[in-house]
Image (tube, rainbow, N blue to C red; front, side):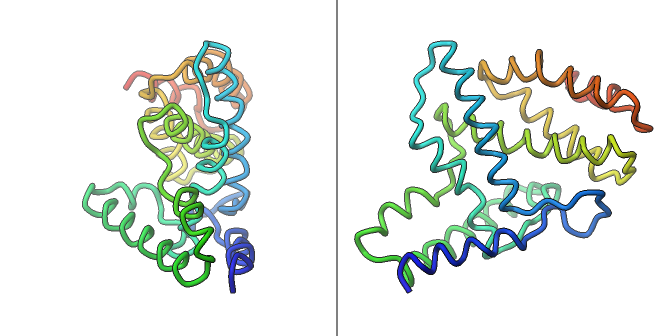
Length: 209
């Protein structure tokens, strides 16, 4: 099958819906999520560069665009479930990595295998690019949840998603996090002022943690 199998498999990411099983005003696919994460990440990286931080742009684009490829094999598992225990998270990651490796072995030509292993591995690490990916990924959770809360969706999962993602972002030590909290988030909260859900209070509670 060769690389065609990889290109063909990308269609599956369009069919996997995030946060399954809950009422949503707006559906989001894993494919759309990955595209948005790339957009967030490149702006976050620009902010880092403005503060004199060196960015490996090739690595950044590789890890952000491919960070959820493994969900082709295991689907989108809700964040509260995925992170309910370190043991479960570790097991899920091992299953995902194993299935990606099997896919590469079965389908990717030998001369491309090292490239695909590098591009499809877990990219969240302590490098500046890995931390930007962490923030960008959580930012999309913030925006997805905000969109639902703004429309008055009272599903508790979206309140938890919004709050928990903000807490995670807050504790990443990057210049772009400071910029997000000081310049972008206030605009978001202001936009949500007329929601029936008190987004400002939820935001303040999250940032106090």
